[in-house]
Image (cartoon, rainbow, N blue to C red; front, side):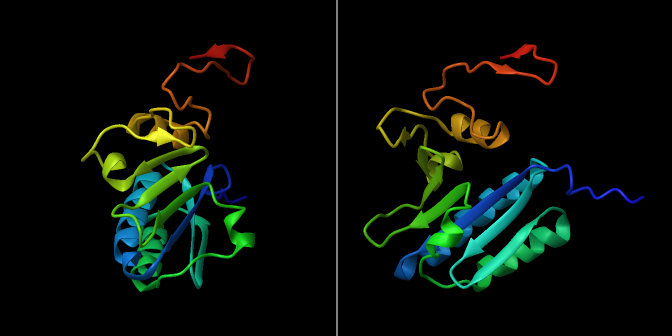
Amino acid sequence: MEFDANEERQQVELLAEADGGRMDDVAEAAASVATYLLESELAVGLTVPGGRVEPSAGPEHRAELLTLLASTYPGSVGDARRENADVFVQGTADEETVRITLGERTVTFEQLSGTSLGGSDRDGRPTSVRDVRNAVADGGETAADGDDVSHQNADGGELR
């Protein structure tokens, strides 16, 4: 019996889309997010206008993701693919920055990459880069305002 490393791995679906001249910025941000997720030992899937890479991991998969991002073009992804996305990387013509959304939390790429601090959720509450990174790591269970969130482990014990 062979062990498939991806079988036990948590998956994250990444979606990247952009208006007109924003695709290079979105591709750069999506490449950084994908690399971070892969380094966090998550299987990463990617959907862009006109292309898709199924979730997997490893150096060859990373190259496949980056190749797709390098060759993608501006546009939007259809609703059917949008429903499955966990992380959205979007650039619009009317904004100067690329926005990254996970659940109800949105930060700019500059905030996520550490060149700026803070951010806000959809209700305007402050959030931090740490909150978004933790939300990816804990499956979206981290509070947007940084509050400690209790969890139960597999034997019913509480984690903090």
